[in-house]
Image 1 (cartoon, rainbow, N blue to C red):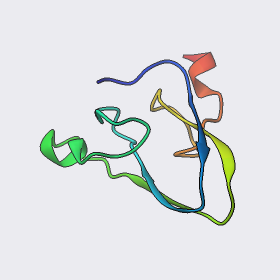
Image 2 (image 1 turned 180 degrees about the horizontal axis):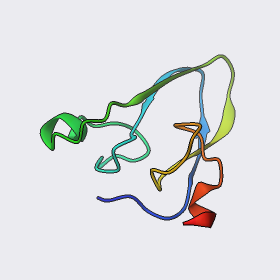
Image 3 (image 1 turned 90 degrees about the vertical axis):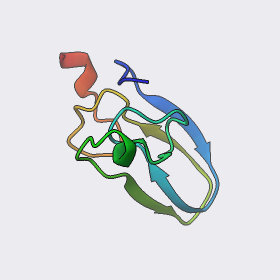
Length: 76
């Protein structure tokens, strides 16, 4: 499942999350280990949330604020 040119919006619960940064996860926005199986050279982004919140996760691979979308897909 390659990168898409739009962010993913997720209503998250508190805890540690591992978000896909390689674009290959079958369980986006979460990492499923595809980066290792496909030797992408990328690692998941670990994020710990202390409260419930809505997060905007990059799925274009261009963000400078990984894993959070910074709008870079709009300039691609």
